[in-house]
Image 1 (spheres, rainbow, N blue to C red):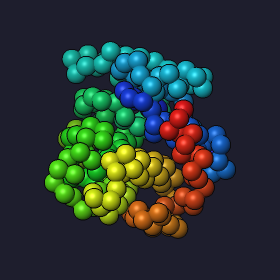
Image 2: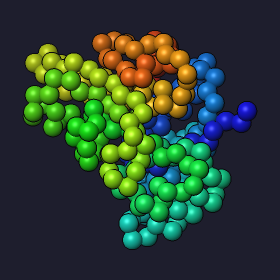
Image 3: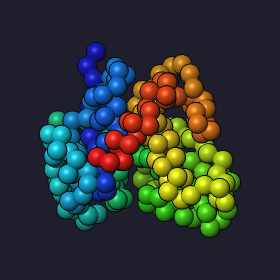
Image 4: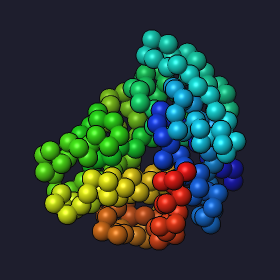
Length: 222
């Protein structure tokens, strides 16, 4: 069976891209997917990393008034099976409606909490409101921002007096990566519903212990 092709739409430092690339290429996960390309809306850490590893890269000055180039690149050029939307833009309905492509987004909150916020701004808002459980969500992308069907979530019981913001952000980043990987695997059985105090639903379909501290340090420092 052929591997499913993944395209990343990116704007930022590329932590999720780095995670998935290293998970595929360094760990014995036997994935049924591969990253074929990234498309960015600016020069950024994701682009720098993609060039470094020899991944096909394209920069498009995307805005809601000019979608044709991005549409063509997704729909007509080596059409992917999955698009991971880490781009800091709201995608037009024309794009997310491209036939036979699954658009997946990763959000650093337990949606529907803090929908519409970008990146780790969700953590700042959660602290302001003294939220007791935080987490990450992968979901299908629809024409309503952050309201598509939820695919996987992680949940962490935060203690704002005990945990530093830096530590919390790392916990949520790591759990979001595992949620994404779990979503991509789409296994029919469940193995791990809790790891390092973070709960997952659906349970992870792989042993998260394979991602040791050395692996996460490499992602942080790449």
